[in-house]
Image 1 (cartoon, rainbow, N blue to C red):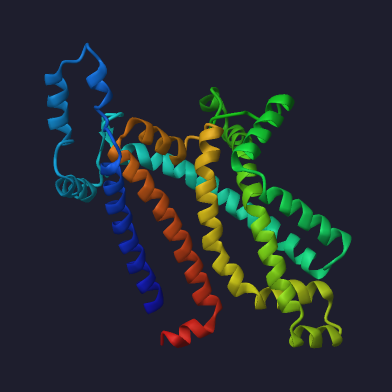
Image 2 (cartoon, one colour):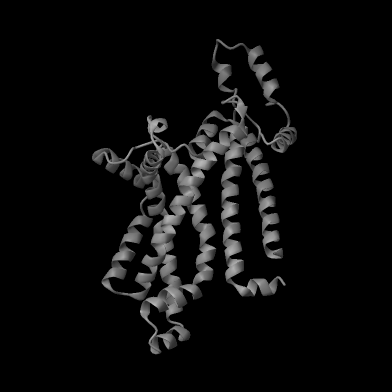
Length: 322
């Protein structure tokens, strides 16, 4: 447990560092939320000065950060200038939507990558393995924006899937099954984009890990004893290759989070991606810091989950920390 406790302390320090750097980089950027108001002749300089004093925009950076920390202690995460409300009330619904999208995409990507990578590793050099390598290579070179636009084009041409949003206008009038179906239809395109973005890396890592294990002497001995191929592949070989694959979980979550920002904005999924882009455009400092911290928190939780699974799967970690 000492290992996991140290990882949690490390994650807390990372959050503090990210918050400090977010404030510093925002302070270095030119302009602020009220900069454009100065160009509007209908707004007097006195009004702009009063608003700057109200929001504390002229305070030194350490005082701004101290005020923000007090709002974090109250559970507000700062105040949004653009939305005129606490950041927490804006962030948590968006974070829930992003979490729904990324968890679904991560789960499905691993469910596809493990059997596909295992099958490719068990048939090295054959036509199926070469076809899998060609497809994954093609997906690796496709930019996120091009892939998202391609899926939107398919949806528009076929009319099978909605091209934006999270629910339809008649969502409130649907029954439980109808609501679930409507949500699944809206989730299909952004989840498919994230799966296709993350799948090539996962498949290649699963294949490489299993090829190395399948060449091990204990696997060859088990094959000589007549152990069935499927049992040998999915029970013995996959268990032996579990450590590097578990470590890959955290990296896959990081890739999905970075990709989800573009996909959410492109497909109008109401997650933290569009909120972050809007905060950058409006120079809304506290919303910007809140969205960055939320993304960092998701990444840290994913890595902590991978560390916990690795701690349970590898007895050597438990022996080293005893």
